Length: 298
Image (tube, rainbow, N blue to C red; front, side, top):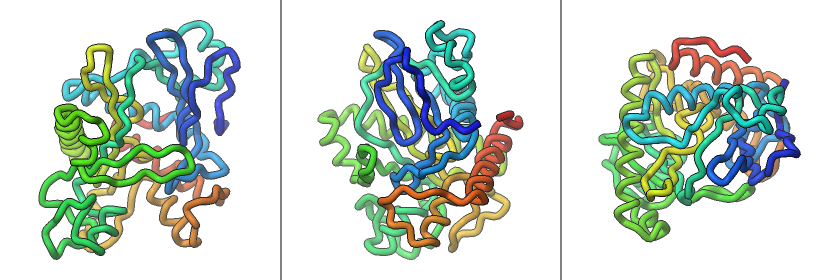
């Protein structure tokens, strides 16, 4: 069954994000619940993608493990049997889509890393020859591999608002700490580089992705939220890649393309047709299976 919104009255709801519901467990931990909501262009669609939250959770856990030597993450456990009793009473709703995590001071930046020129970056480049006001060589074509991996942060918008791409120098101003901004940049590029090298061995190009970070009690940088999922990344099949055009993908770009084809206003929540829902879930599951080498049971 699809989970559009979790209902756990005995848990303290902290926030409902575009995709995740967040509960406070105690003074040191939180419960992240990946629902089946889908957000595109920062708008939450009316109907869910059944099982999507379980795919996102399973894939994030895979990446947390693979990337733990690059940067620590906030995971305590995803084993439902290890969670407190007052969480376990909601097993039917939450199992397979929930992780218990350490509380962090969440940083107000989305750390976007691009290896290829596509999406909003391609649109800006066509107009100005830049991405996030970072100058790039002339003559690049759509979906081309960038001369070097590019770190292009954005602000973190509230629900209903749009994230804003910013120059890396503005990130330092927002954080008020240039050394921290440099750490985020280095960590994001290192995480992307290791993940993209791994994905390449599985026949997948990670064109770009988004990371989020927090600070622990010792002010050390920690990887948080979801990691390298079809919601936060563009995954392209390497066998079908060809620069100079848009690419087939294993991610929600499929939904974005559908919405643009119907003239979506990027403001109003709408219902997705059943064929778009079915195809989107298939793409998410295929990405998981290719990257992990295992099928996912929903």
